[in-house]
Image (cartoon, rainbow, N blue to C red):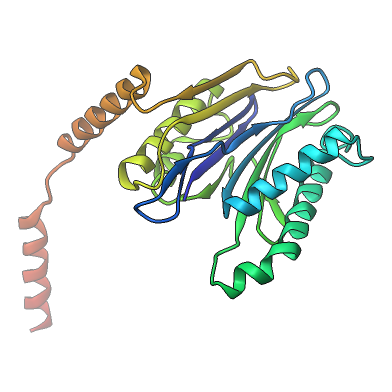
Length: 256
């Protein structure tokens, strides 16, 4: 399992991913999940992968092959992010057609999902989630984030804090806390954490980082977040047991 997320707003994009892959509790490995296919000055293309590792690695190999052999349709020639999302979806179908029968007969899950984010000159930044079947959806101002992998633990903070107007630096901080919350609750998600922040209309990635297990900033933000949550919890009012007890007694007497 893994966890990747993308956030889009009026100022740009944030994309982040963990690096852990597991095939059971006794086999845990680290693999890159965030890939940069940008062509500086013309387009920024960022891709995150989740799901069956052999499928996603096969898709990444096909994308690189088309770039290397300068195929007519590749990540650097297609004129829009929408067409790139369709192109990647077709690559997923190709790998599925080759491998699905053999994986299925051994009961191996061959599903995968891919996040695609970036900007091409002449367009606004865009963020897509490409499903295992090759179809996809796009993030919108009303829903400015997309997740793949182990999504449930990191979603509440995104739901409660993010809007399309959230400053880009704050969105990056929110993404990191979302991944850290997931790591806290699920051992199949873990560092190194890779993160990219892209500023609209710059057509180059200026901000990227990788946080390892004992990174001082990762430890600092985790401790501060836990302390802040505990402080907020301590300030929550206690349940008004007597108030509701009186209401229940009143309802009972009314029924009589």
